[in-house]
Length: 340
Image (cartoon, rainbow, N blue to C red; front, top):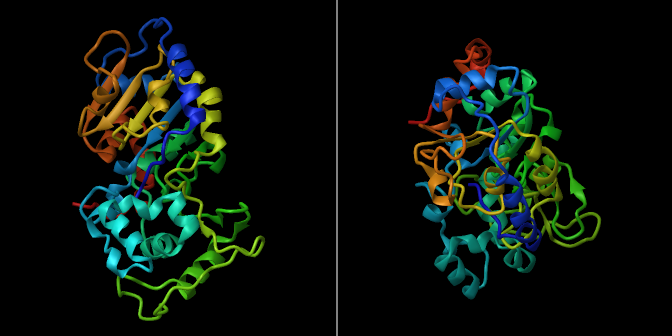
């Protein structure tokens, strides 16, 4: 249930500058070996103090949250005929399910977004999904004083269940766990927003017997327009300024970049990996060699890029073998049940 947004003009302008900076000469090698033991040893060393992490939908799969493209995700389950919309809008959603999260669609008709997102919004309020082992690994990383910034493409809000300070988390595609007016930007308390969703938005899945039979508008208290929604970034909207600040301020300081659970095809979020300093090892945690598709060749000797094959949770355990397994184990009561 995580999504991307279109490349913005600002990202297009900045990207070449970032890539030029990242292409500077590579310094002395930092990893004793380009494998999980070498990465874990460097991670635990005094030489590694500033780690920037980029995460995608794959780190939340163990919580039971399917991404858009997986079985059970929006592409797989969308039923336009049940959604409150004009015939031409339903036809557009049938052709392309991402129409539901287009900014133009939301400004014109808010019901498709709210009706599709209703179970996710209310499930987030009751913490139906729990932060995964990988999320908790990042919590340990922060407790060790090594996490400089976590950039997540996920809108599920699981990162905010950890003890990582919110100011260290950049949810570059927004969060379903916070709400505001898309028009004027006025925030609304999330619990209050959820009560409005519960009372005003019909349940197209037929699970909530107390849901209204028809959807009705939810007006912003500030501007009186029906544009209240979670703070997720809609397709066609710009990413938050905080993301570009990470590119300019934190990323140049990174001594290690960890990429987990993302295909790296979404721009400009992938600039966290592509724009990393040339001397900074980039660690790809995924079942697939996703870096190759965007020019990150983990087999090349040009720079210290390492592909750790496996799911995010398994990679977290392997990296915690640097001496942090006890701390990771101490958080085990918070883990979700493993999704098979």
